[in-house]
Image (cartoon, rainbow, N blue to C red; front, side, top):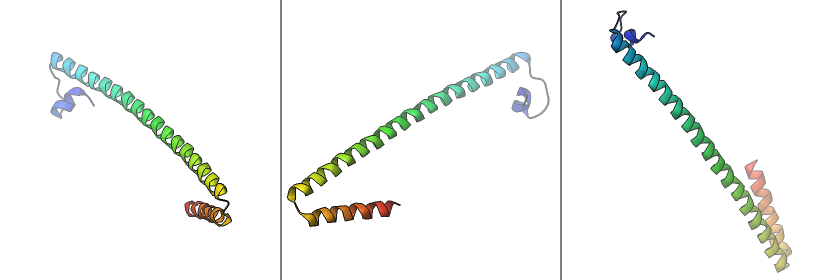
Length: 97
């Protein structure tokens, strides 16, 4: 839309100085919005990286806990405890799916 229609809502000519100022203000706003857009994209990518690191850390910790629990069950030499542990794992996987 033409600048003078944006200001007055009708087709009339603005003084040249006012029209130039309005043009440059609009151009600066467009540049500012582009800069903000790039910053937002960078923030989103940083948040995505943090989220991926958190998921990876959770997987590593889960694996460590799982290995530790299996070792502690095997140390006790209790077949019932081991069967109970694998029953819980089986139920948790079926619950997720």
